[in-house]
View 1: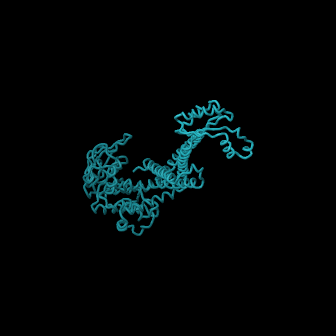
View 2 (view 1 turned 60 degrees about the vertical axis):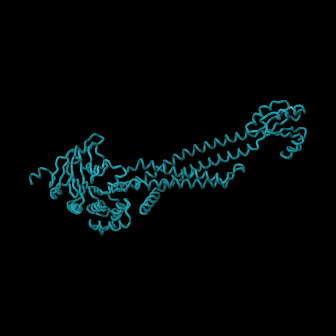
View 3 (view 1 turned 135 degrees about the vertical axis):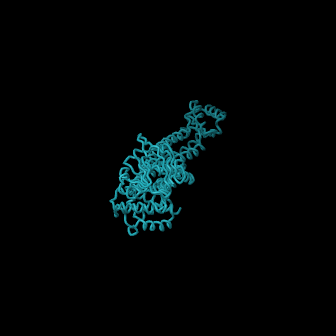
Length: 284
Length: 232
């Protein structure tokens, strides 16, 4: 066993060194494609986490016309109270909304704003976030209502954008992973080709098939492993040095999970590439 | 030791390589396999190594039908068969010692076995003082002796030689034959395919002659051609 381990180690490192340019190409391709996979996974998790946080606080705001009559306001109020999908509503008077507006708006705008120009509003929390749309469609055409706003829509649009980016990342990563597999396959094939005399002698004197195969499988495995280690460093660096908005920030376990996926995919690609090379080019 | 029972082999392109061969080779025998190119000598040896399987018939080695051997057992079969070829098949970037040691290393023999067996076998073939040389620095005859050493270092039961003297001058052929005889005297069965008429005639060993896949002669103390045999 010890003899074999030494032999396999010598063969594997020798092959990697002899074909070092191909090895570097294969490792880098694995690294780039797995970095994309890792980033896509992180992005997906961040987006899910952020939208979950936003949806917790989803509110629907029914803005009344500044000129709305008391009747119209109380009609909307009673309808909101009767609606089963609305958990609770708080009425903000014009004076309260004015105070809020002064706080939110830049000074030059807030100074020209008069309290009677500001709409009063109902700040409502729906029972489930998606009901925000029902409130929106029910009340936006009511007399005295200026507009109904819900942040849900922005969340959806952002999620769609993130999904598109993610699909693009994964598609690119898929193509790159395929080319990484082919590159690994090719380096192994070259290694086998450069050692074909040894292989034929080994077969002749009765070396077992696995004895002949294992150094080549190890070679592909190591290329995949090196590639995924580089990708893990890249993903971790991205995560650490370029933190997104707080709500996107993932905890360490999510990062570890992503890195585990990256590592497994890298190792699998290396092994699959070399396995194909062995099946096709190593006739043992 | 070796038994062919009604063995036939036809290659995929339709050329018959061996037709209905039945043959027994005892342990410790020395057999010449003669015949023109394409007569089936090489197929005979490839069948013994189980590089090919017969289409019909059975081949037994040491009492076992090698056709029934599962694929993963084939390497273990080959450990009992040494092989020497016309083109030596040495590894050019390994020294003489390493070439012979390689045969033991790749079947997982420990370092201690390698260190004791290789010098011994190099002594037998008379290349002790060239053990550090590369094959390219040796003469053809010396290279073939390295190949014989590699084939025999694992003490196989059978030694197959496919035209081992085909690339050598008469003097070197002579020394290879002397070596094969010595190996044969240790009880190893030797099967040698050859074209070398003078050699076969002088050795007076069993001769099996093939012609277009058919066995046309099996003579206990034979010579290369029948006509010459009659003349003698």
